[in-house]
Image 1 (cartoon, rainbow, N blue to C red):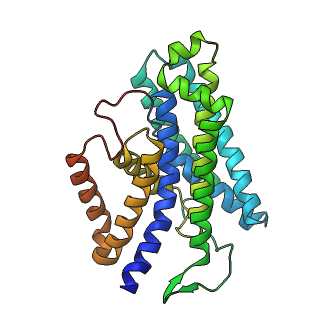
Image 2: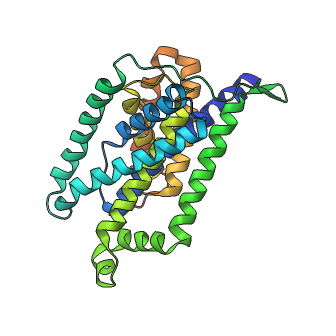
Image 3: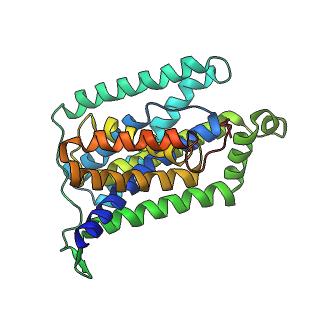
Length: 289
């Protein structure tokens, strides 16, 4: 029983990272109706950037994460600005454009940081907490708290601020939003920037847990994408639930099937999607909204 609870805790930690990645996918999809296939590589850039400022510049880990968020948010703005002329004209070219951005980012990461990658030391050198016989890493608690605060901040922004409300309006009907004076392009840019910022948080937090290299974006990106689909693509609540479910499934599969864990995770994921194609919180008809 203790082993199962220990594995569950590890799964929730991974799930929090997947949920942050899934939130970025969902936010861009809700506002722009676009799947940003470069999102995983933005996660990787965030991980490398935070680790550079933390390990090379010797900045405190929270400050390194904050700098990574700012840099990737700017990167998100660049991606949106390049794609903006294609908005509403050539959707396929926009998708290809995001894939191209992902390839470019991965190549740049190899040039800048090298192909071997790096191991990031944990910023919290404290003994694991003992809760009813279950050893819980202090850093795992930090990951869960930061992910929860980031999610709360996003939900508050979307529902309690004027800009967030405008983004919701754009998600529901961009033409109607434009007719009442809402700048759709600016709304999309903010969605890309926030999504990239969330990706940076996920990548930064993943650094001390996973090996940081150029392929990290593929690993976290595909799990985050699966989490977004499982929860219901474009649904904020679904992204959180989907992320946690994929994380728990990932942890238990790694414990039981070791080298075949990835295969088990995606077989189970495929079966779940076959049962409910729109995801847990998805609507029967999936539209830009």
